[in-house]
Length: 337
Image (cartoon, rainbow, N blue to C red; front, side):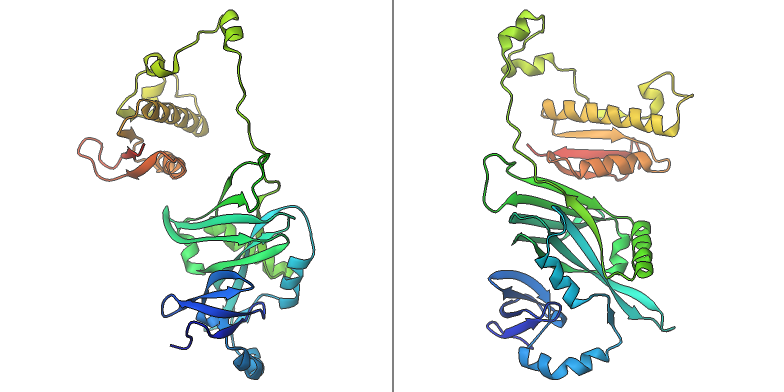
């Protein structure tokens, strides 16, 4: 093994010195730089003395990194605007025709605000978690997250980040969640624009301003009663709810009689509203599961429902598999209370 815990190292991208604190596997180590610990691939670090004697050889390597170390350091020193970004830096290699091809993307979190945040980062491919990281990003700093192979980005990547203030403020929200979903076509377009503009990175804004705390408004129930509103005992709220269903058929002819003049968008909107309604009723009635019949078709309704379910905290799991009654045209949802 090239490194051992306690070895002094230098981060090749930023020239910052640190040390190895843990060997994670054959390719990755946990390093500590300026009191912050994060994972790094072994080819992203080197021994300080080896770096001094190998700089000329590094220039001769075929790999071309689209970055400028002086510019990247400048990002952390100058305040551009009050936003937090996720930034992608393509790393290019040469193919057999000596053309530039993207090998991987380096991913960074950039904090251009004057506030320190704790964050939970989670990368999903096709709905399954692939990489998780929890750490803190200081004001006007960037934080290297990890590398992603370019070929993996065709697997419906979703970047979820939950932020909270490092120094809690009772006037601010306890946490803030945001998510970025990218499609392969978007990435190709961004990279082509990057080449034309001769820029090293492209970015997406995660949020502009950390939200304020939302206070629960107290309502004078006596005024509502006097105004003619019906008031219910919360302990008996189920008695006033519409009945739930264990199976919901979203075929448009089951939802409305007048549908033949509707556009595809209008039909999809009606179907999704019906799904949300019966999903909420299932939760309110504490159902253990719910079957949604969406049909096969082009898969648009199924995909929209699956994207929604991925963000629902009450969902334990869901599955779209062969069912003797519905074939592959239904998704079964299992809840966790």
